Image (cartoon, rainbow, N blue to C red; front, side, top):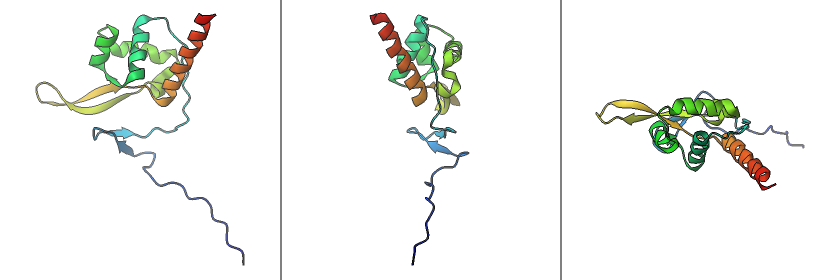
Length: 134
């Protein structure tokens, strides 16, 4: 007697509309697709390069990026970097619960490169090094 062929079971986990907790207990939405492709067309702007270098090291808040890249309007710089091909899917801002200096509960924005964004920036940096080496 032949055994019936079973269809593979899908892995169980959080659904598409659910979120998962991060290291700080904040909920992080699950991305729609893990195969998101980001492109980065490059820049020569020193502020944007400093921002990308800092974000390749670790996620950063707006305040820390202001100090790192040397400007007072990091959201505008991030918007311009996103327009260079990364988009919101490659360079998102995650809002986390925090407390301000007066003890009030606030949401603080943390900028980070996704894996696709990181690959796009690193690919551009490698291409830039090859052109400089010629």
